[in-house]
Length: 288
Image 1 (tube, rainbow, N blue to C red):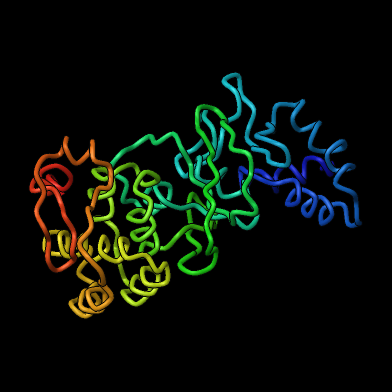
Image 2 (cartoon, rainbow, N blue to C red):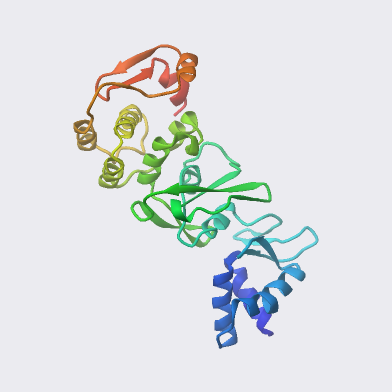
């Protein structure tokens, strides 16, 4: 078997590979050190020309089985004529990045909306990349300050990817609701997250040092805790500790006045010092 075929069969196992990963495999197959430029010209370009690979963006490639319908990708059920799983692509966009927000909800099986066409790749703000689209899916960078706490490795379509833990996903989505799909999507999705580490949930919330976030996490846990069978791992001790950190005057859950007017009258939740819509449950939680 030729070296290019050996390299191809190795790459086919992962479906998505970076240039660095391809160079590493090529060196292992060839048995000597070769430059990335040599690998690109001698192996990657011929694989693309033969229809066995496709460039996603600079330094990132998908590798599949060529057919009359285009590249096909191995699955447990056989071959399918479509792009590799979007999360596999997103997981390789940045070496230090990880999937978060709505993408993490999807990976954890909690998302209420199927076919989401945005993948959120979290990176340090200094490492933000240019967002791009590939086959109808947008890969969007999200600048974050913390890239280790609450980031776990999960198996996804046979590959290992980095993604925020259920606990960090819960906090992140409440911290930046727009990236979780908006309040209705968030409330219905995070109620499906299996929270196993209340200490991590508490630590992640308090470390942000945001009064509004502390109140939102406490309020949502209190609101959903009686209804969702998945949040039972978070006990009264967690709620009490969060409540101890609530300081200052009451605040509106929704800062946008136009949104508040659309949602109707509000009432004060004294425990969390939040003005929330009287119809909050009906608006955002119904059906959970």
